[in-house]
Amino acid sequence: MKAIRKSKVTYAILFLVALGLFLAEKPGTVTYAASKKNGLKNYKTITVEKSQKIKGTVYSMEKNGDGYTVIAAKNGDQKTILSYCDSPAVTTNGKYVYYATGEFQMMSNYPIYSNVKIYQYNINTQKQKKIMQRKDAGLMMVPFASDGTYVYAGNATQYGSVYGNLTVINAKKKTKVTVGCDVSKVQKVKNKVLVLATDAPHGAALYMINPNGKKAKKLSEENVVKVKVKGKYIYFTEATLSLQSRKCRCDLNGKNKKVLKDWK
Image (cartoon, rainbow, N blue to C red; front, side):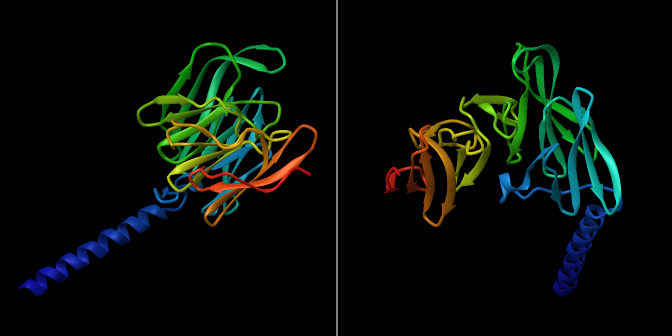
């Protein structure tokens, strides 16, 4: 009897696994289940200039009047997954898209918006929820990265992939932490997040934060133009406006900074 019961349990488990695989691969459905182990790596930044491929589906943005449209293409089929947003970039893992909208107010050096809202949009159910709202007028906020829980956003700038005033939003609790620095990329390093702004002209400060945006630590007083995480260290190149540069490194926790090659 024990053997029979064990056999039934085994078949039941196999059936559920097979059913899950069938539903995941249902034709015509754009899906990608994010793995919590990968976090930030699962979400890609999409802009008009840069499309991204996730599990065989290519996600891209097109200009749409004063805003943008997000499109998914797979096996020659193309469909609109987000008809309109105001943010010049969105981030997606193929299941959720984070994007922003706002009410245009005026054009000064940059477009100014009020009532800026950031949304989480479910591609399959077409349902969305607001995770942040800023009522005062200012620059458009751009959600450019996520780890599934926290969404990393910043103000749009003239440098495209560089965002100002980094803000970290908890998509579940709908709370936010303002870090306030410039950023072009966030990268997971052990249980911390490295904040890079190497796309900015002459670079910018290098920071390390908790995933929720708290306990920001500045790793360099000089602007940083190159960063590489390898082995036990974070290697980075500092630079000045006079084009001097020097190479440094620190531990993966941001401590024990050491100059490898001084100014040249």
